[in-house]
Length: 364
Image (cartoon, rainbow, N blue to C red):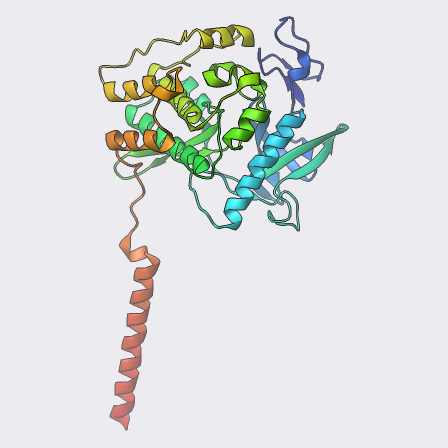
């Protein structure tokens, strides 16, 4: 196990992290489990995404690969993970499917998600809250952008359509995310006959609360300042609504277009970044000529005035789909379609029965 500072990114294998920077309090540094560490009967393979509120791991449970999310210390983080797990529990029990959201699985052996949507386990004297998900391949979008800061524009569009659709689904249940960033989702690329298409899973469902509740219990440390909507900068007067999620979508799109975060935050204190956001000192949009309509969409979405942004995530997805078309899907072989196979099977059985009748009558 090691400690990692969520602000300056220093690490301490011994668990005794000390930061020389005044803006990096060591108590904000969660303990990150290493390969082979155990959380109950769950064996850690590797950490996948480290966020301020939780850490996502690849792990093994009951001899199966899974994804494990562990809430970081703090009551607010535990409550956030509980809301996220209970939302996924509710839609799965109602059989509401959304291909852009992860599939929750039971946290313990011999239980169900209806009984236990999330789990608890002791580790070095601390009670940790966690949830388990069905394993999917993918990399955090943040890691993909580090290797290739400016993706092919069609990949940018299709990733955003998937992300926007996931957020729109969340909003359709009256819930806000208000914490979108490139660390919120996993992305993998599928090789199709015509094109290489991205597939996304939104593993961070954000604040998972309705606007009224969000504004009442909002805490700033939940999301990095560079990805915080202006209307949430003052925790005492938070005023989030569905346009706050439009802002989050706009920031992710903006970052993929210009090749760097809209607000520079590496090795800067939270106070410095908040100041830059308040003053609207974002990186200039430098990608206009080849995709002017999309860059204009991004600029509108990140406007400081919520009333000037797109109405909601559905509006963003509609505009992106009009420009890029729907995300390419694998074409099914009509001969492998279950309905087609059933019709063929029934036809064969019918022919066999008719032949058998004809033979029996002939012998008769």
